[in-house]
Image 1 (tube, protein in one colour):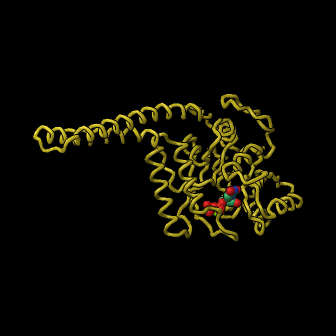
Image 2 (image 1 turned 60 degrees about the vertical axis):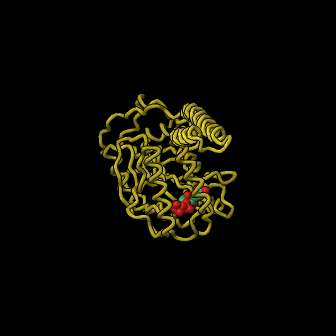
Image 3 (image 1 turned 180 degrees about the vertical axis):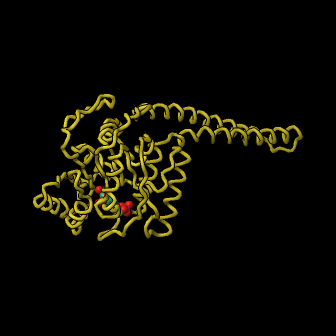
Amino acid sequence: MNVATNSMLARPEREQDAKPLISLVVPVFNEGPIVRANLAAILEAASGNWYTLELLAVDDGSLDNTADEIALSAQQDERIRPLSFTRNFGKEAAILAGLAHAKGDAAVVLDGDLQHPPELIPQMLALWRQGLYVVEGVKQDRGNETLSQGMFARAFYGLFRRFADLDLRGHSDFKLLDREVIDAYLAFPERHRFFRAIIGWAQYPSAQLPFTVAERNGGTTHWGKLSLMRYAINNITSFSSLPLKLVSYLGLVTLAFGAVIGIMSLVQKFKGQALDGFTTVNLLIVIMGSAILLSLGIIGHYLARLYDEIKGRPPYVIKPPRKVPRK
Ligand code: UDP
Ligand code: MG
């Protein structure tokens, strides 16, 4: 399909009775032993009679036999379209590649380990058919994760809410996107992406569909403690320049403290209680400290501006026209 990136242009209408095509975008990394069965299960559960499916299986540079297994699946089922990365670029990149290659009128992004229940896809599509642009799978509970994982997630979402002003609790990458939204997402120039946050940020007319996180069927999660930490820091800093600006607030606090210490030193000096030279040293430390922090803070503000400009995220997103429900 020829993709019009300007959301104001009407898309060429499909023929009246052609069934819409739905793209399933599934990132997979080192899931060799389970990927074939899982792709088959996803297609089976997602099928419906008023649409056709394609499944983009994006092998994110797996080190095991995942790519071969996907190729085998694709031989058996022509709805499966394999994509393979040269190396592991991460799930965000895999989602982006899948969406970029998707031909559908809508796409559903879901994990390849069946933790995002594919049985919900027909329901998502029914909502889409009624005219919604985004349908978000929202985690009802967080599955059986450990205490430390839960605490980490809470801390991350708390920080994210405060810094980026976006409430992502329960959000996941399990989402349906209309073609309009896919094109808008692909048109974003930013390189580092946080899929669920960007879709949440854009606030297209959407619906939430609660789901329970299933047990992982085989394999283990790919998130180590360190990679989760990196993920958290990257995503918070890609949505907020507040950490950069914090330096100047720190400078103000130091200045206030410094003023108190400075005055106390001077008072002691005039009362003759101060050691020789002590006042000068005290004042110098206080003045230099706050001057440096404040200047860093000012630089931080300019950096933050630069950073926002360079990121190139659009300053607004046009609301797409209200859709008439499909028959
Ligand atoms: N995944 C990926 N690239 C990666 C890590 C994970 O494509 O570098 C895929 C993985 O195969 C799975 C999904 O992303 O389909 C979610 O990963 P995982 O189950 O490890 O994360 P969790 O469910 O524990 O958050
Ligand atoms: Mg998983």
